[in-house]
Image (cartoon, rainbow, N blue to C red; front, top):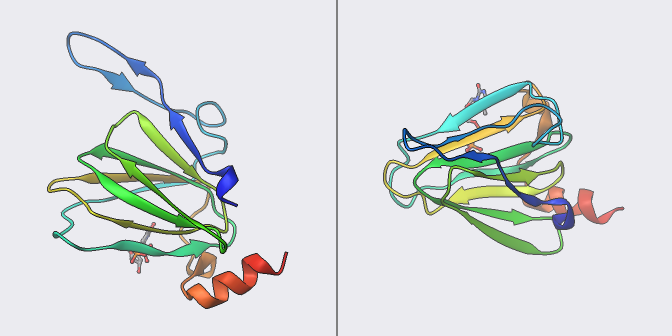
Length: 135
Ligand code: TYD
C-alpha cells in the first residue's frame, strides 16, 4: 500500500569537485537490482507509466530536472515531486504509478528488482482496483 512507499535520502558525498551519490543492493535500497532504465526527451505535457506491477519493486530518481510521480494503491492517491538527484522514491509492488510534469531535459532513472516482462504489467486501472481491494 502507499504506506510502504518511501522517499529514500541517498548518500551525498559533497565535494568541491562535484557531488556524488550512490546506492547498492540491499543497503540504501531494499532489494537486489536486476534492471535499470531511464526516460528522457519527454515532450512537454506527456505522461509515462500509467500502470502497476504485480511483483516488481522499483526506485525512481530524478537524476536531472524534475517530474511528479503519481501513486495510487487502489484506495488513495499520493503525489511525489522529485527534483533532486539524491532522493530515491521506493515504490513496492501493486502500486499504480504514472509520471508527469516532466521539466525540459529531465532524466528519470528507474532501478528495479526484475527483468522486463510484459506479464508483470497491470494496465487496466479497474482491474488493478479489483486486485488490490480483494485483500
Ligand atoms: P513501458 O514500461 O510500457 O512504459 P510506459 O508505461 O511509460 O509506456 O515501456 C515502453 C516500451 O519500452 C515497452 O513497450 C517495451 C519497452 N521496454 C523494454 O523493452 N524494456 C524495459 O525495461 C522497459 C521499461 C520498457
